[in-house]
Image 1 (cartoon, rainbow, N blue to C red):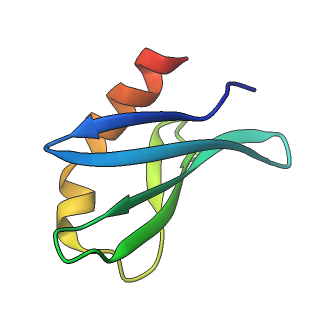
Image 2 (image 1 turned 90 degrees about the horizontal axis):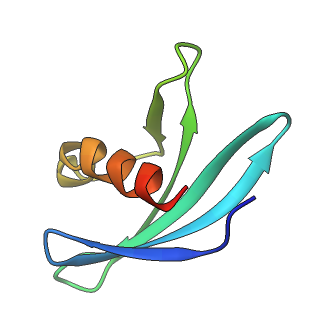
Length: 77
């Protein structure tokens, strides 16, 4: 599996940590917002093989950046 990496997306630094869950590979991701709150979530392929955000009570701006997060993962792999 690939190594840790960071990506700056819309002036926020996202930290990507590879992880495996059963036979699926994905990423644990964390990011701080403007107030310093750290948000953590995972991204795994769904049943349709599309990578998607999985997490609870995440702010909408994280979901709004989903396509950019997928692009960062694809560029790293």
